[in-house]
Image 1 (tube, helix red, strand yellow):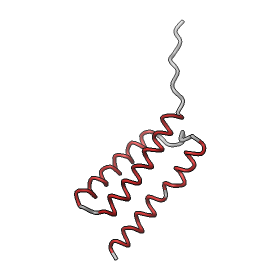
Image 2 (cartoon, helix red, strand yellow):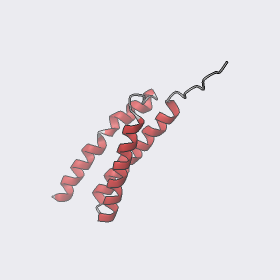
Image 3 (tube, helix red, strand yellow):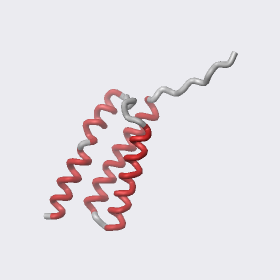
Image 4 (cartoon, one colour):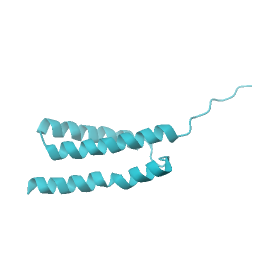
Length: 91
């Protein structure tokens, strides 16, 4: 029962990234997501992944590895799509 509960929670919390990932992929735009948000979430998910590995909890490892992959994809899209700051022109 514990594993089923964990799998249900993991499916819902990890699956919630799917619509954002699809939208980001289609529009090639993630300008509404801040770098600070992506960084904080990535660090938190990475810590949960490490916790799952140390605890040998397959559900936690799988859920956080999948979420980390989604965050990596979204971050890659953001790097490629964010406008680059233009250097100031001095006259």
